Length: 301
Ligand code: MG
Image 1 (tube, rainbow, N blue to C red):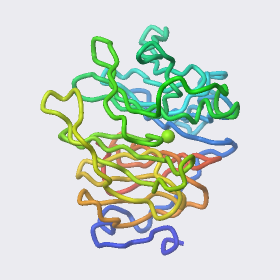
Image 2 (cartoon, protein in one colour):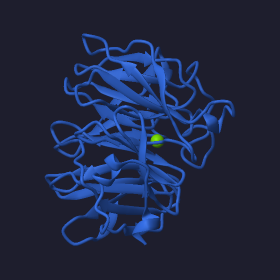
Image 3 (spheres, protein in one colour):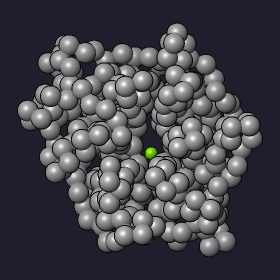
């Protein structure tokens, strides 16, 4: 099976995997899973099952899966901030929210220029405490993943929430910005464009943008890597700058120079993934109906 599980394109990838490691299916039964986030202090993982309007929780100690929250306003992407708090992208809430230590919830951003956001999709926290998120239209396109509604923004863009609140638009040249991540030194912002869902000529890709010297905006972007199967949705970087991305046939791994060095094949479309476990060397993968996991020889940023 290992020959089928791994598609090794480059020796660099062979060093990033354990050939005898197997793919675990930790859970199945979702409609469209996304938004995994690992909580090191609690040793659990949460993820979204968007059409079922729920957040699920996998307990690393006993493997049990329970409902974390339902209904949840059709959450999509999640991350954990530097204080260990959950940051959430809500389709139906059309906002980015934060779950506070005392159990209350704070809406961090729900509008730009006086108009509602589309449907925040994925989110990352920068070292300065600012929160960067993408705002494609998937959560308002139909009632399946949110509430159908007309788009009030002039497009699908990327935004930054300042540490002291206040939202700015940082990218406005994408079709459907989706997953995003910073390089380790935070000089580069990578953003996936899934615009092909609405614009057939938009090649599935990850673009890269140089972060400005003050860290608050980005310069002009360029296409960086293209997806040969399906779409790049969510992705993560490891500590050596390799990019591990969701795709139509599993997880694609790219070296920092943009070379496709290998794939981990999965028989369902992958939407998103994250590193977790005490050593951050375990990939947690949201694959359509299921949550998968595999140990790799790399550590997540
Ligand atoms: Mg996404």
